[in-house]
Figure (tube, rainbow, N blue to C red):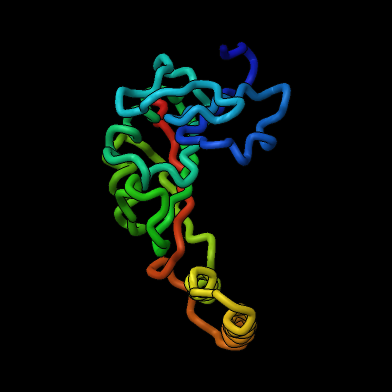
Length: 196
C-alpha cells in the first residue's frame, strides 16, 4: 500500500476524510482509517485492537477531532508513536470548550497541561500545543454555537437569534480581552517521535 519515496500520512478516525484533498499529491500516500465504512475509506477497523500498520513506517499521523472519541488515549497515542518513523510527527486537533458530539462516543476533554502530560507519557518529544483562537474568538464561538441550538420555531425567533449574533460580534470586536491558554475552544498539537 505504501510506496517508497512518498511521504506516508494516516488519519485515524478520518470519517469522510473532509481534508483528503490536502493530501492529493503524487508525493503523498494518504491512508484513511475509521470504524465506519465511509466512501473512499482506506481501512475499516476498530482501532481498539491497534493500528494495522507495521512499526516505523509512517511520516505523519493525523488525529483530527479524534482523541475525544477514543476511550483509551494512552493506547492510541502509543500506537501512533509505534507506527511513526523516527522524527515522524503526530498532528492533533482536540476540542476543549465544546458541546458533546457524536454521543455516546464522546469521552474526554483535555486542558493544555493535560495534553502535554498524555503526549509526554506516550513517549513523544518536542510537544507543541497552541490555542488557535483568542479568548474573544472562543467566547464568540461558544455564544454562536449556543444560539444556533436555540429554538427557532418561527420567523420571529430566527430574527432574534440573528440579531443576537450580530450584537455579539460587535461587542467582542469592541471589547479587548487578554489572550490566555486557559480559555479555549480547543487546541492544536504537534508532537514528534524521538530519534533515539
